[in-house]
Each structure stands twice: as structure tokens, then as C-alpha cells.
Length: 401
Image 1 (cartoon, rainbow, N blue to C red):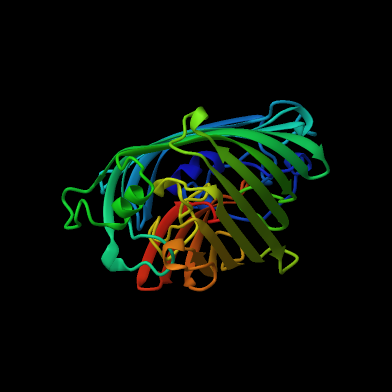
Image 2 (image 1 turned 120 degrees about the vertical axis):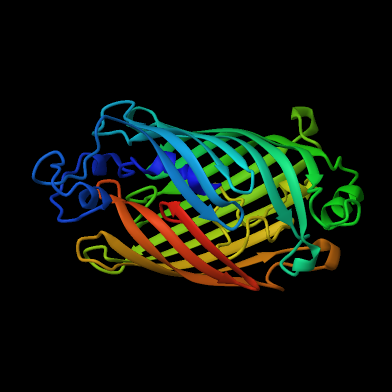
């Protein structure tokens, strides 16, 4: 599912306006150079400066534990809404894909900067026809409780951020998520009436076939990253407070609080070694959210938390996730790189009095990177991860965070 990020990152530029106009001679190679070794690109010197408008449409292939093999097509645009000397590059994209597990994903994403970055508009629209297993609440949930679900998912989300000064933005958002046509997979052996999903929805008197979350959010953003999707250095902080109300179309009333930190340090002057830290947390702080709306690994913005586990493996009203990744260049020309990473998930379950950090699900792995586009730092990502009684292989575009 996370392969829709290709739309945004295959042609993205540096995140800051001053980076967009900076031209630097580099001696790097990417997959385009390998496929077309005799083709001249711009001039004899490669540059890091993006064009005013770049369009692209191309097929792609992805792989993940929750989807299996995924095949799709993406269309994308990168552009400047104003003078590129003072304005960051905006991006928008549309992708559609299907998987060998009979899943369908249609995603439209956008990141739009206004003149001199006074406003930032972030959009995330999705339609999924999905199959996904759930295992109950908390990191103590067991494989024997696996409940295969089939459902359709609709997301409409827009957030407008206003520049507060420096690297700070404040924002307001509107969000609508709906799960419908939810059913226990009739081809599975799981009981349709005795499983974690039905137990939860019955306890809180929810409709087991559909649920909706409709609400508004207040946001605070701090971002110094030098590149939005393959960062060498910088800090990203996001606080997001959401209020869902029946009067706005929600199944019930609840409140949610999310925090995210991403920190990047270059360990070498030539950026050949990067140490990256990611902390993501998600809490239901008021009311009872429907089961499918509870925080879960693999359900962050780009569906990348929990490498080593299937998406949705751990779910509950409180979630904290952390990951540390070491990134390094293998070839001197930047074409090939590698990573090593470790992560940990902790998810609560009030039904068993399981609090955060009382049980932790660790995972770790290694990965290979192939440079697809040296101007935008876009990599092909192949990762292998091992978790607790779980493994995963991931083929995608761009870094996990």
C-alpha cells in the first residue's frame, strides 16, 4: 500500500527554497546512467536544481507482507507556485495499483507550498479494497487469534498549515475515514462470531460492518530537513490533535493525539553515512474509537511503521513506535547503498491491563538501496526484516522515513 509514495518522490526536489536554486557539480551515478550510459543529461555537469515543472507517468512494482506483489501505475507533477528562489517545490500525484491478494489501492496525495511558503497544504485521499488480518489488541496478541478481514476504505483528508516564523507552521485540518462492507473473510477458518474484532465491536455496541471517523485537527509542525524524502540532516517534529464527533459524521465521539519525531545526522562530511531516528506515537485520549480506527503499526501516514510485521499486526488505544537506522554508501559513485535498522513497538490493551512498555515487540533488518534519480536522491528500497515470530520483505521507492 505504501508504494503510492512513488508519485511524490520520484521527481521531488530538495525541500528548502535555497536548496532548489543551489547548483553543485557532482560525480554520482544512478539507474538512468546505467540504463542509458551514452545519453547526455542536461550538460556535462549534473545539477541538483529541479525544473519549474516536471511531469511523469510510469508503471511500478512493490512488495510487502500485507500486499504481496503489487503492480500499478503512477502519475506525478512537481512544480513551483511562485518564484523558486523563495518558494519550496510543490508535488502532487495519483496512483492506482492491484495486488495478487486481490487488493485495490487508489491514492491521491499533494504537498502544495504557496508564495514564499506562507501556506502549506497537505492532502491525502484514498480508496482501498482491502484484505487484512487483525489479531486483537496489544503487543501480547497472538497469532492464533488471527482474524482475516475484508473491507473497503475511504479517506478524505486536507490540512492547511500557516507559516508562524522560522521553521514553524501551525495548521488546521479536516479528516474523514470510513471502513465499510467489513466482513470476516468467508474463505478463512476463523469463526464469524467469536474473534477479537467482533468481541470489541460488540462490547462497545458498534456496527461490525462499517464505521466512520469524521473530525477536525489542530497541528504544530517544525521542519528543518534538507530533503523531504531522503534526508541527510535535519529535524522533523509534528504534533496532531484530532476531535471526532457524531455531529460531523463519526460513528461515535473520540479524541486522538499524535506525535512524530524524525532526526537525521550525517556522520561524514560527504553524507556517505547517515544515522536516522524515528519516534511515532498515537493515543486515543477520550472516548472509544471503533476497532478499525484504533492506532496500529503500519497505519502511519506512509504505512511504514513496524517493518518486520504485517500491517495492523499490533493495534490498541495507545501506541509508541521507535526506529533507528544506519544508512551508508556502498559504491563511491552513490549508485548502491545499504542500511541496517532496529525498531520496537509497544501497544496497550486495557482489557488485560496491559500498559505501554510492559510488552515490547522488537524487530530489525538490513536493506539494499539503488539510486533511481541522483538529482532528487530517490532510491529503490529492498528491505528484509525479522520480528517476533515474523519476517517481512519490502520492495518500494524512497526511504521508510
